[in-house]
Length: 376
Ligand code: SOE
Image (cartoon, protein in one colour):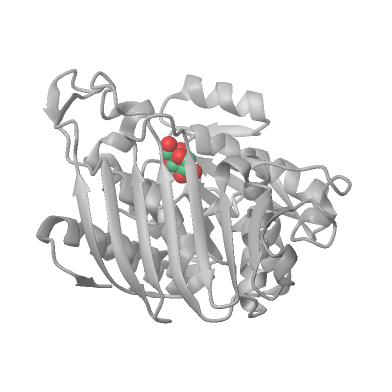
C-alpha cells in the first residue's frame, strides 16, 4: 500500500465533499494507493484547526506557499475561490505536486492555458473536479452512446437551475458568497453551473464548435460582504446559449439562479436517431431511456434504476436496488484518480479537458456581450 499524502487548500462545502471522498474511496474501491489527510491549509488558523480536527487532517498550514514546500505532501487539492486556482496550480506544479483542482479550471482561457502548460511541463498528475460525470446514471449514458445505441445524435439539451440569489439582500463576496463576486469567481452561472453541463456535454457528445448566448444580471448592485458597501454586480445571474457540436447536433443550454422553486436542477436530454436518454440530478440514480427498436406495442420511456452490480460503479456499493447519492460522485472521482496512478493512464477530466470547457465558457460570455455567434 502506498500513501498518497493530501494537502488541501480551502475548507468550504467542496472541502467536505473532497475530504469525504478521500476517506471513502479506498474502503469501497481496491487500490494500491491510500489517501492520507496530511494537511489542511486555510488563512484562519482557528477555522482550519476545527475543520482539520473534525475530518482527521494531521496538521494545518495558514499559508499555501508553506504547504507547497513540505516534502511530506504528494498532492495538492485546490478548493479555493476561482481567482486563486492559477497561482496555486502553477506553483504546485513547479514544486512537483500532483494537483486536484476544483471546477472551473480558471478565471478564463488565458489562465487555463498557463495552468495546462505548468502541469504538462512538470509532468504531474492532474484533474479537475467535474464530478457529475461519475454519477453512475451519467456514466451509463456515456456507455450507451459509445455503444452506438442512440445512433446519430440530433439534439443535446441541458439546464442547471437554482433560485438562491433572488433576494436582493444576499451579499456578494466573502467566504459564503464569493460566487457572486466577479473578482473572485470570474463569472456567474456560466463558470459555476453551465461549466458542469458543458463538461458533461463534451464528454457525452463531443466538442462544441460555436455558440450564441444571452446573459443577464437581474440584481445590479449588492452589498459586498468584505467592504460593507453596495457595489455593482459584475457576474451573469442567468445565461442561455445555443451551439453546434462538431458532430452536427444542435445544443441548447440554460442556467440561472433565479428559477424560483429549483435548488439544483441539473438535467440533460439527448435525442438520437434510434434512442433518447435523459437525466436529472434531483433523481440522480435514474436514467430515462427510450429505444425506438423496442416492439411498438410496448415502446415507451424506460425509467432505469441504476443500482445493479453490472451498472457503472454500482458493483462496489451495497446490494442491487439500493441507491447511492451526490457524495459518491466525488468518491468515484478519487477512486478513478487512484486507478490512474496505478495504471499510468491519464485521468479525465484533466486540466487539458477542462480547458476545453473553459473555451466554451469564454465564448459564451463573449457572445452574451456582443450578441454574435462565437467560434470556440
Ligand atoms: C453552486 O451553488 C454549486 O454549489 C456549484 O458551485 C457546484 O459546483 C454545484 O455542483 C452545485 O452548486
